[in-house]
Image (tube, rainbow, N blue to C red):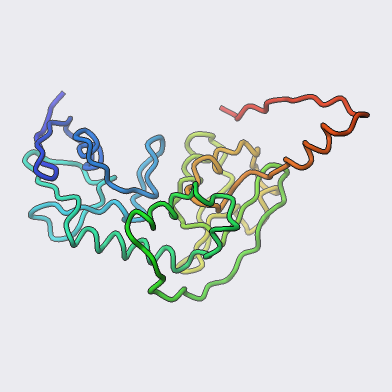
Length: 236
């Protein structure tokens, strides 16, 4: 296997040719923040949170998708990098509901965690006016909340690539772009098998499992019922 030498924040590392900047940084223990990236899915480089500086390059590069080259010198924490990451995150937050306390992903939200990590403490940008999409509660297993979607495409990738179902895809254009079932129908009206893999990879609260906890407690408290637990496996 052909290897190349690169320098990440003054640390030289040797990695296989074709590796990304993100992979090279991980090898020397340097953590680059990411949002749309998921190690089990194809790289889309949508969020631009992982941008880094490459000496000699005209613009900042996305670490998750940019392959390294021999002799490349990478700076992951320069003032320009920190400023770009913060602005990109602020733009995402400007079109995101500010109801963290009531969100199912509160304290487990990757967007919330990044805001804390990058020092985003106030909203500087005004939200753009877009068509509001209603919450989809049509299935027994999942709830889809388009207002919280950050268009990272993780759910699309896992639905198409891993599960081979293709129940959801990008729809509309520009500010009205959303991830939804084709034709503007509910999730219950397409080939969704309610496996839950989309909710597993979603970094925010845009798609999550229905909570039947109270119904379970009620069933357990009902002495006239014999309660049986069954695990439903995801499709493969």
